[in-house]
Image 1 (cartoon, rainbow, N blue to C red):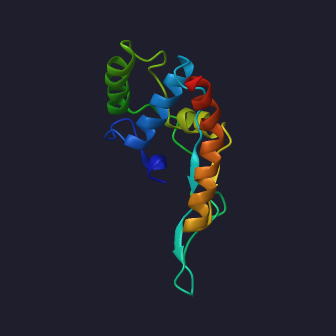
Image 2 (image 1 turned 90 degrees about the vertical axis):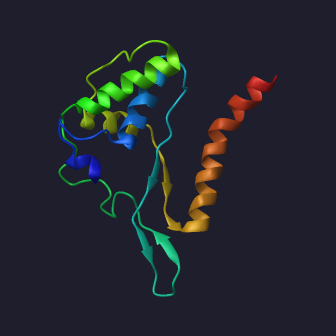
Length: 140
């Protein structure tokens, strides 16, 4: 929800910066994909068990959507990170909040839902399914 409240003059939001950096690295072929982990709202059940709601049904996606604006401080931070990581600036310098979130969410993510320990095991298994073949190819 904080992403929905950003404007052109907001301070740099690190979550959004990480999303934009991931999408830029994917464009350059430095990442094969981006796997969002969709964490629902944290609740405590009547029995004292920590639970996480469904990301979409739990209201974690703002009903009004995300602003179609570019955050200046974020674009400067993205350029700095890209120069440090790749030696060149980003290919796209006008990412909007809306465009960034939509680009990341276009990749079907893994849901962190239900009892915490169970949800964590599911997320770890899903990430390992994606990473393990790449690691094994690299080892050979």
